Length: 216
View 1 (cartoon, rainbow, N blue to C red):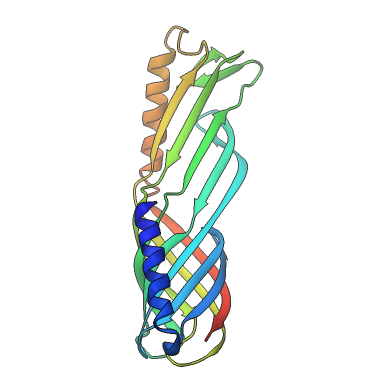
View 2: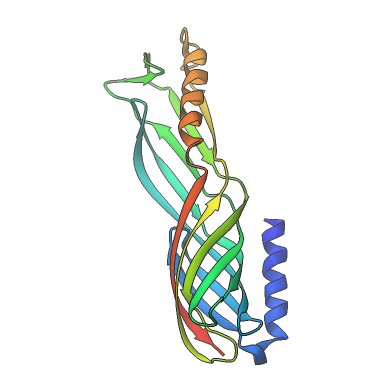
């Protein structure tokens, strides 16, 4: 959060001294949620952008015979450098995303029980929680089209396609009387390893954003 605040303040200070160079502001919507962005073209082929975006979604997920329900917190905060190799609307984009998309999920009982690592346990008054979190800082690479170019005032539109790269981590936690049941702690540990193995293949987080704004 401290790093993100410093980045935001730096972008604000930069924009305040560079309005004559074509600073743009825009709204953004996509896989990182809803938010706002600041675009600063620094030349015909180069630009710098900063975005703040987030969204919380509630949904149900099934993993290895366990149905979870909870909140997915999307984070689309980031700082990006746009390079226009052909001096047109096409952009090559590099940068970093911040905040760490995460999920807080609770296992749902079926007929009063929950199956963990193939074993059934009494879920009456007991709970199993899964916390999943991506790194707070992740490198980003992608391509894009649109956003204002150097010294071109007016309305701007943008489309960005890319990936944030980072390994998510999971933590399974039992509460209530669940941990007191024979074999529960070992089953939870084994289940956590299974979920982590599945998440290891999700090191690339797809990013799709659309935006509209105005360049001064």
